[in-house]
Image 1 (cartoon, rainbow, N blue to C red):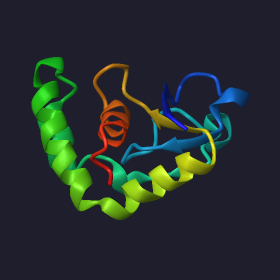
Image 2: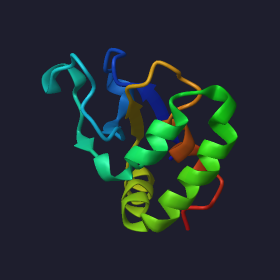
Image 3: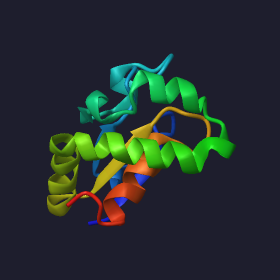
Image 4: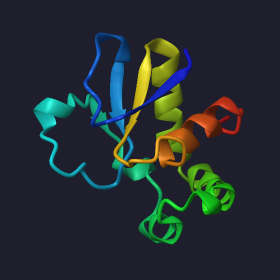
Length: 118
């Protein structure tokens, strides 16, 4: 099944399937009950240094993806866990960033769907 991407602050939906948060830190102002996160994969999130370098600057997006893909390649176990789960059930990757096009959840989806996760 394809991975879905959704901002964690959006209202949970029954069509989300399994909700997996991929942020290193818990989203500000959101309770665990309200977020309805089934799994928090904080170790799949970008390193602190990469996250700070990127700073959610869309102009840095191509380089961010390139660097983050290298981190994901070194984190095969977490990526495989996400891939295997998505083969069995619908998975929605959750993120906290305001930018819905330039964030780690989008990058993870791109990484998996491009076949790099093998």
